[in-house]
Image 1 (tube, helix red, strand yellow):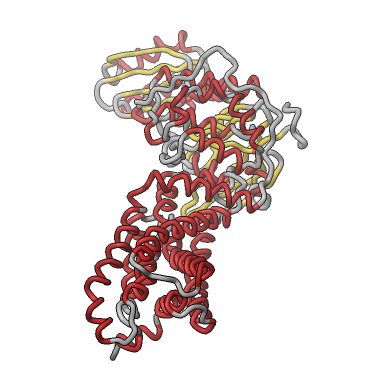
Image 2 (cartoon, chains in turn orange, yellow; image 1 turned 180 degrees about the vertical axis):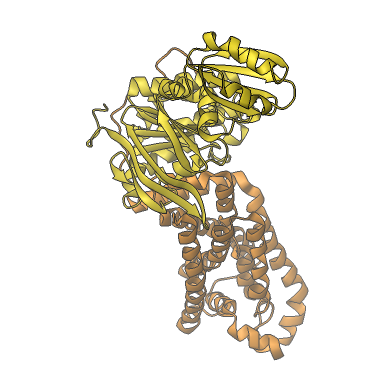
Length: 275
Length: 324
């Protein structure tokens, strides 16, 4: 039984002339994103694993493949090659979709819907937080890579471009998680969206250059958008500014983003539909 | 009447309001006309359609038919205007356990377009209601049920709404806490002239709080009026007899007793309504004894339970009525 200890016999709520008013869209987005970002350090269990996994794969892949690749491919630098792989393993799947589905289950999502906040701002606010988290996740991996001697040929601006590609890829992929969260309201379904990670991240040129792939894997890699994201990021690290590679990376992200965001916004409409 | 209203005296109005889910009609042509500054009790058992009606009036659901206005704005076509003017405390406290109390209230204020200084002012205004001391800076996940209820109510009030919806606000509270919540509802209405739409499955809660009561059963509004008006509908007095065996056998015997208005029999209980209970109880006892053995006989004034029984043919289940 719950005990409610309200003060009795006093003026508990003072009269006020304050009135609610519509809030600008950007302010709504900032408010929702602020809440999402405040939650991040309180849910380190959702942040530590991606960092650990990214660092783990980065280090272990280098250790496993360094002699094999560098001895057989002329001028090949496995550390520079593996940096985008490690980063994408870290940021792919990072999203607040799990938190959103808990909001739906706890009823807090309904509380948000009862306010005048624009429904799109709820989603965009979470995504803004995802971008910030993705960039923060990249930092320890980049620091480790620099410590191991990796140099980004495109310079400091190239590092920023590298981070930007990582963040927008994270956002494009996160759309799938949000779509599942909003469509199902089921945490288990959201967690299972992790399965998408495997074909995207491993049926591609994660471990060796695309030219070294053969057979069916080479065919799939040619259609896998992650291949072009990796190649775009690698171009910044190993060659400097390569407009063609970067263009293909952005196009690949855009295609995935259009698909995932279409699913995501449709799911948002379904979830917030009052009819 | 609330002076801040730009509209007429009506705070909530519904005409033929319908809400259906996959062919099941949860709210069936409900009409409402609730004045500003009124406490309206919406009474019904679990599954009667109370919460669905609230969700339609609060814009979480669209009406399937009919129309409704809240604070002068149509819930179907002007939901944003409605949302600016209502506060809602849903049946389960809808809170984010990862936020602190103060973070939740500030975010709530921001989403209602309040400035920082306005939010600070409202937090001060709501100070005694929130009244959870240092816990306001703690994560909500650590709060007791009572603290969550208070925070939930504060979140519903932070933007100073014109109309407050409380969906079963005392379910799960102990009797003392429930009485304090009642006092709070009275005070919000009395001191702030706030219109309050209150759903409840507790008959005595509707009796205690509401200026008027609407009784909903199977989605239909089956009666509406002040608690006294509703009680008068079942007669002036109620005689309740507990008998051996099947009470239905006593039904015919009682119908012939002068002064009896109505008889409801269920299991081992017979409920008799009469214009003058004191004058009729003797004859009722004799009539019952002629067909069965009377174990217990009481005379009392009608309650909303009697009203509900009269109107729907169903009695509130005791486990629904008793405090959890």
